[in-house]
Image 1 (tube, rainbow, N blue to C red):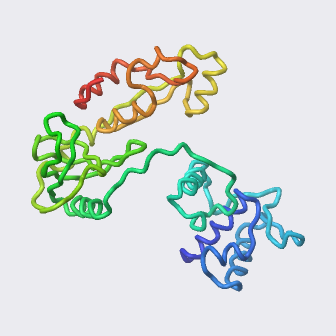
Image 2 (image 1 turned 135 degrees about the vertical axis):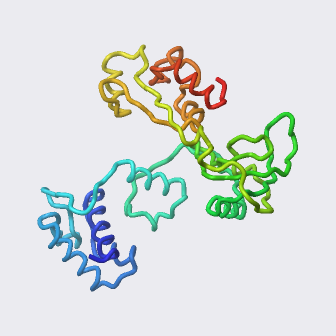
Image 3 (image 1 turned 30 degrees about the vertical axis):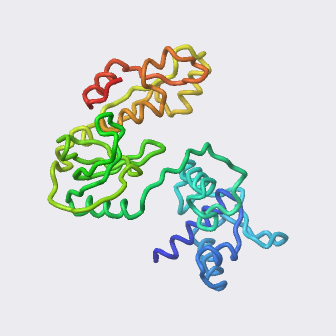
Length: 287
């Protein structure tokens, strides 16, 4: 089966599964195919997934049958919700999403960080080519209050939930560090690399955070927290790069002793807190 046809069959099943209905116009508008082609796609779907949809003569559309069985999709609630979030944040236009009729939705917005598109392109090129590059970088270091030119060898990118950074070897400090993309003001002068990705121990190695419900929660509250986070047997393991450990712990509210915080607002704790503190120190990050 050709890729385009398979994608349209997945689209049909997506609409039937999540929205309960589809018609020819949906396929025509989203994929730009002809009406006859859209009819063929619907007929093919009926052949490949018999009994999955029925024609609603009043609504002039196909609706999901009562005994609907997935044939082409492996639906994931997080994929659906990520599409919903992207539309709500306007990072994806509504007409580009497979969701036809999104419910009313809002998200807790954070200020958009200003990343220079040319800076990003050149850093990406540098990563792909395995080179180094000079960046005019504004640090928050007390010893360097003004931006300076410094050479870095970037090899990866990280996202902490609100900010993107380049993971790179710093030729100035001779160590691997995170460089926030919005703070790279200019780039110039590509050259040979310094430390390469295989030498970045904190990026290449992982630490397991053992997470469980806050001890002050009731038994029923602990059970729902375990369900919420997908814990098996009351706890779960989150495997995190040492280089990303600080960001993950900060986002989860696990910097410091979470057990001393109110269980009403902090629902999880690190069950291996001492080992986690040691891991932060190992990654050269102090609590």
